Image (cartoon, rainbow, N blue to C red; front, side, top):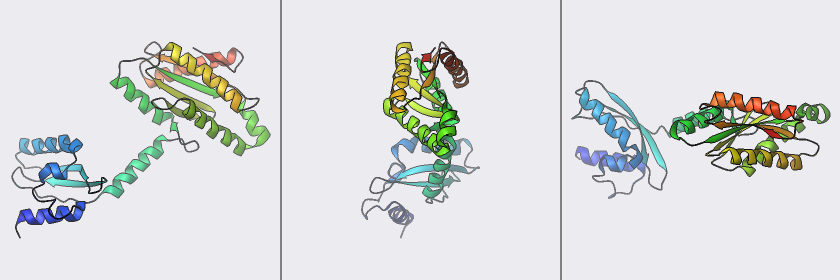
Amino acid sequence: MDLGELLNLSKEYLFSWEPGNVWMTGPKGTVQAGELGPFQEALERILSTGGRDPVPMELKCPLCGGSHFRGSARCLSPRRWVGVLRDVTAECDERERLIRQAHQDWLTGIWNRRGLALQVEEFLRQQERPCALLMIDLDNFKGVNDRCGHPAGDRLLVRTAELLEELFPRPAQAGRAGGDEFLLFLPCADRAAACGAGERFCKAFREQAAELSCSVGIALSPGDGTDFETLFCAADQAMYRAKAQGKDTWSR
């Protein structure tokens, strides 16, 4: 058995390909199309060093049936490859789970402040279009905890997150800043769209939660800022202006 046959038997075992569908697959048959860029970059690094230094890679490989095998390989020479390909799917899934957990609000499941900040910053880097950040504060929320207990307050917070996602589906994104304060990011929204969203949520919340209301502050980019923290502060100040106007309203 030559090296090619051995290699292809290994691919058959790792990727669950049928015999006869593996021969001469080459890199394009082992590496998913979207991963060919990193694969080519690794090859170029090897050539630039003359093969003296090992180059680690983590690649996503197509598995028979449509799922994916993830592996890592080390390339020791431009002419000879000494590598280890292993299934690291469990490690990658756990890493992604921890990242999601770090950026999600533990109670409601929507973004926490840090998670939403990353989404906003990514949009601002990639787009040169207007957007809006809304700060939403539940008026007199402490009274709910005092009268009905914290479990009832928690249920109200969860329902508020659900209402935000129902009224403003993707590409809008909702987050919880902390306590009874929520955030709503509206990409590509101008002043009219953002103010309409604030008014719409105030009305919907009032209808959902009897005897309760909310105050909404609106910040617009680029006018009020071009980064998350600046927009957050502007929306926070606008929210306090809404409260000063008597609550149950929105403000710019």
